[in-house]
Length: 200
Image (cartoon, rainbow, N blue to C red; front, top):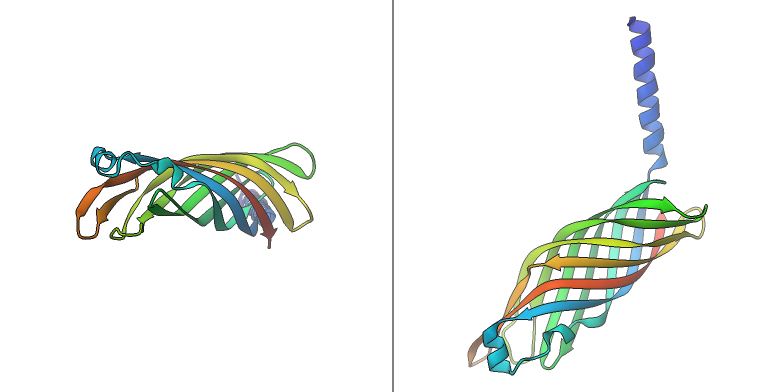
């Protein structure tokens, strides 16, 4: 191959790469949803607190989040921070997620897309129940998400989504003046959410 042909090939490849990058855009989102957690209780906690309903502590509680990422017509990747808290039967928990996600798009119409993908990151579980010492733990988070994305204008879109996460964050319940009563292990969480997105 002559030097000229090599140069033309390099220009073509660089041009295609630049065009692909130009098609990408940054985006930011505000999310609002409801989260329900599955929490495993230790045997000692069940015995000492008479089998409390830990799954009801965070059950369809309001969840706020922020996202930043990049997207094109085929896919997107983004970071998410969200948090939710709830209390039930004297137990108070807060869950905070810091996640990285990747979605693929499936066009339905010129302005509507389905999406689906995977998520990995960290979950922080904090126990702050009245009468108990505050305790927190950070564990992994792995999951999937899917939903529908509707373009509203050139730079704005809204979406309805569902995300399921598995986690291993755990926290202890130590009653003040009494001692450890047992532990709570977050095993999974499910979130239904709506999001407003702005591309820039």
